[in-house]
Amino acid sequence: MVGMTADSNLAEGKEPRFIRLRLDQIHVPRSAFRWIDDAGFYPMSVPSVTQQALPILQFIQPILVSSGHNYPSRDSSKKNSYTLVAGRRTFQLLLEQLTRKSKIWVIHIGLDESETNSWEAMDILSSMLLRRPDDETKTLIAAALYKDDDFSASSGNFVDISNTHKISSLLGMSRATFNRAIKSVDEMALKKAKTAAEAKTTLGIADDDLVDE
Image (cartoon, rainbow, N blue to C red; front, top):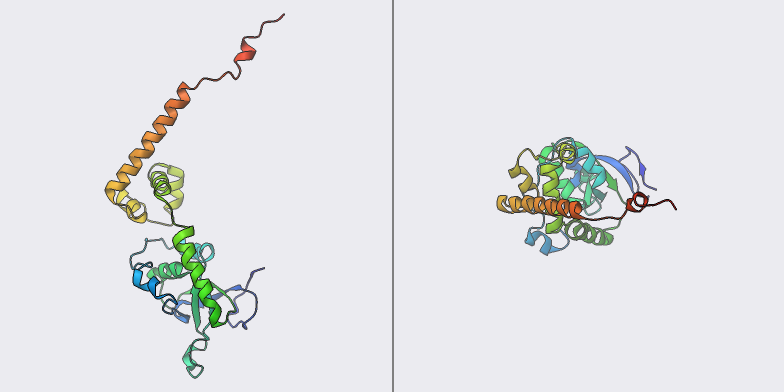
């Protein structure tokens, strides 16, 4: 079970647990897989998230670190440094809005250097494949952010969706694609409503037509 502690001096080999670190204590190595950096899968432009979203992200999409064992032991300035293992996207979002001295929650894991590649590979796959919405999903999200008052009110606490440009930018859509998406959802809703109105059912009719014998 993952425990929570403010102790940031954990020995290697202990179970993973949340600890508090300053952003400047986290060293970001070049990706172990060169094609990731060269292909630009972690773009410089990222969705603007609100301050309210930042602490929640630290638990929903956590950052994983290991002790800074890849620093030369003679470098005393790196004694309290940690190496980013996974959660690069969250780390990028936090760096956008927080100072380097800000403390954040991360998960400290005891790994030797040879194991970190597997964790990084999983971080890449989950970011790019497991969470990547298809066009249909993006269309539904666009419509929900634009038309569903309850959903947009809740979402507006965490991302800037104050106008259609902000929504389309959040989803990586052009304005034209966004407008087509909204139109397609409207047409779908109209078609479903029409089908429901025309649908016939025998439920309840039998009781009304019963004749006492």
